[in-house]
Amino acid sequence: MIKADEQQFWTQSGVASLSEFADFPLASHEDLVAGVKRGDIEIGVDATAAMALARFTKSARASVAGNLLGFVPMVLALLSVLAAYMFANWFMLAGIAAALLAYLVANPSNPLHKVFYWVALSALVFCIFAGGVSTPAAWLANAYGSSFLALRFWHRLSRRWAYAAVLQSEALTAFLWKTSSLYIRGKTFGLKTHRP
Image (cartoon, rainbow, N blue to C red; front, side):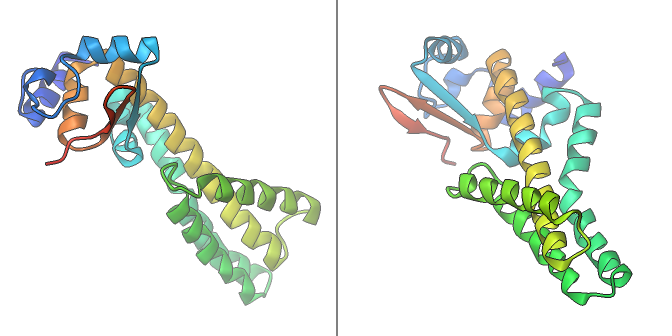
């Protein structure tokens, strides 16, 4: 992360050190990093924040590629209209709802995320056995499964980058804490996040 970005995060967080936050559960960034390395502390970054910060935590190119993955549900929703016309079957418009559903449930913080993940995998396996996506059921399965898995991949990748960046940058950590986008779980203090 370049110094200008670091300074921007310090400015937006309104502090010059994590220790200035009264509700930060540790004495310093070094304590956070050491606790994570020891396994006493777990950290998590909000998926929306992680995706938005990908250009800082990885690169501008990675951010663009990730955002293209984020458009997969919209593309499949639009392709549902085209598929309905091409196959002369208006039931294929259900792909719009399937892609929207995938968009709504793909966040890894969703408590039923694993259930929806297995449904997405099963949907794509169904497409393979159906021999393509030319039937309404197969198109519906494809719209949901492809949308969900593309979004899941983007969520997981951006969170991995954000996780690594938090361990390297106190300024980013302060910004995420200030915006309530960072979660810290310690063996001695439980789950903590900033409450404005």
